[in-house]
Image 1: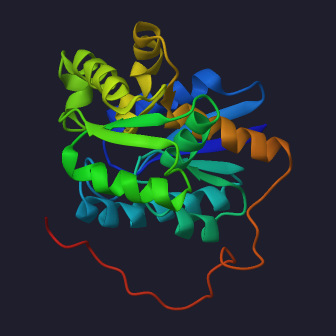
Image 2 (image 1 turned 120 degrees about the vertical axis):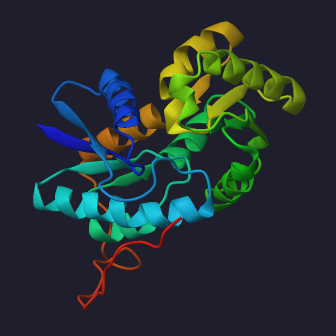
Length: 242
């Protein structure tokens, strides 16, 4: 049995449930998906500050997974918080949902648009597109201005996100949409059906990427940068108040 943990870097359990359901829906037979809610950190991630404080929770989850023999991990936040550090800690593959979504989108069209939550996160998505070599595919990044936690509670959220995707396709001349938040994972199929274009959810894309790597018997290289961190003493404490 292949074990994949889908780690929600925020502390909102309802979002973890949605993420885990979407991941489980695409996992193959013989693959066990477990949704993990971060034990420490913010309730949602909508700033650099939030992201920085989410990383210790991600690493705590990965360290626990290593003790329990987990085969691979998905970091289910579009900022991919703590991705490099998690790869140092984990033996198996660790994939971020922004990384997986952009790479998947690049296979399906000549250019993609990202639709995210708040405008203040657009810069982070742009930097990730550059990091992953996706600038020539990423034609634009757009915000629907719905806070992360409202994606589940606002009855109009799905409609607003859909219209933001429609507008992005027209504005950018793109032919694929990437949803820029794990909290949008369950909107993917419906938006795709309405707009008639591929709409990529990074949770499912990352889950299947991890599954494929594990199936191929591939693990994170420990030869260079992702070698296990040297042992040393660390001083820990409560994060600063927001």
